[in-house]
Image (tube, rainbow, N blue to C red):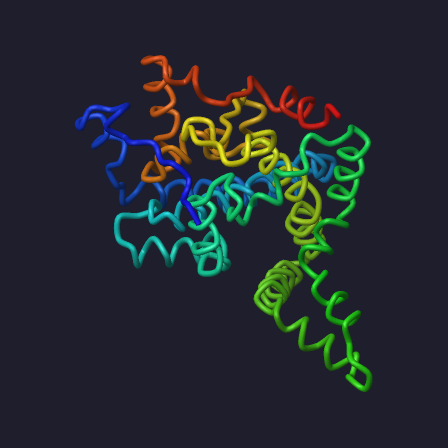
Length: 307
């Protein structure tokens, strides 16, 4: 089981430049988490005040829900705060409670990126697909079908394997209990909003974005990062893709510099806010020409659905 080849920072950066890029910050990550929640609450307030804006606010909130996951991803690498205890607390309680399970899974992805042992290979292996297939996936994402399958699909699978004599109700309750954090958290959120007469805001501007737009932008993110990347790629500059995102794409598809995925795989010690600086440095020395890049998400999706 051979690990994927790694890029060496000393081949691309001076010790001084590398030191600046990898310097830990005790405030920048916390500021980004606060920013993410502030955008979510602002969008919910705007939608509550002017319901006609709800469709736009669904996109804003769904993208920032992805943003929380991206910041949790930085916490999984220990990059959100210089103190590991604070890093993990913020990542778990303010970004995503899946941090504990996600970290070992994700670090295996980095160790074996695009290799046979990569647990994320299943996400990129099917591409390219047909336009019709991508359209069907998009419809499933935007109608909540993907969300229901990902969140509660294990219940249907367990019931389908039910042995003769096993209680269907008992199995249903047992499997549903696995989602208790999600269910309890959303029940509390709904109750708080209902207490001030705004229950619909929680449903329309928290759950609906999570069930729809978050599913689609998460799919686009997965496609952008590794689809159409060669399996068992030996060049560490070509094991992931960087997609150049314009301001609209950064606002509605790729928050917190998640589009610089090639740089992230090359140098996992870099916090997300330093990835643009790393990209500029690589471009100045000509190394970016070796990387897998795309000028935007529309062009990328055309390639991914070119079969």
